Image: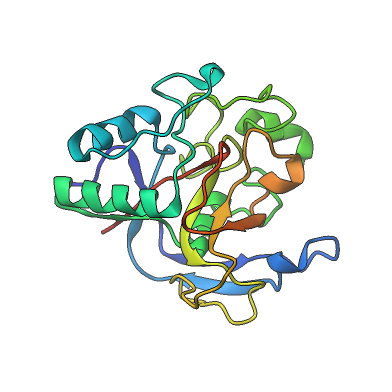
Length: 231
C-alpha cells in the first residue's frame, strides 16, 4: 500500500528544459523525456520532525537551526546530499519500501504536472506567491510545508521554500543527459543538482527549469529535499 503522503505520478512524456532565448545555457536544450515506469513523489518536503525521527533512531545529527526557523513542520535544511541519501536508505529499511531522491527529470516532470509554462500554474508571475514562499513574500525565513497551493498533481512547495537535492550529478547542460528519466551519473567537480528555488530566491530561480549545483558534502540554510518511492 502506498503512503498517503505520496502521489503516484502518471506515466508519460514531457519537454524538459527550455529553448527560451533569455534562459541560462544550463537549462538548455529543451528535449523530450519519457517517464515509462511507476513512481510516487512525496507531497511535502522532508520536515524537521521527519528528520528528528531518523536522528533519534540512528544517532545522526539534526542540523542546527537559526532561532527564527524553529518548528517541526518547516523543511529540514542544512542537509548534505550524503545526509539526504542516508535518510532514504534508513526509511527504506524501516518501512520495507524503496525510497530515494528524485532524479532531475522526475523532479521537473512532477513539478510541471503537465504544465509547459514557466511555472506549474502558467506564466503569470504575479501568481507565484500563491504557490511559493520565495524572496518576495517569505520575509527571509522558511515556512511550514504545505501552506501554499499545490500543483495540479497535489504536490506542495515545488516552487520555493528550500532548494531540493536530486539524485543526479551535475551536467553543464542537457546535451548528453538521459531521456528515460534516469539520473545523469558522470562524475563532476560541480557536484549534484538542486531544484525548485527557495525562500530567499528570486522569481526566476523558482521556475520549473531553474537548476543549481553543490558538492555532495555541501550544505546551506536554503537546501532541503523530498523523496520518491519506487513502485
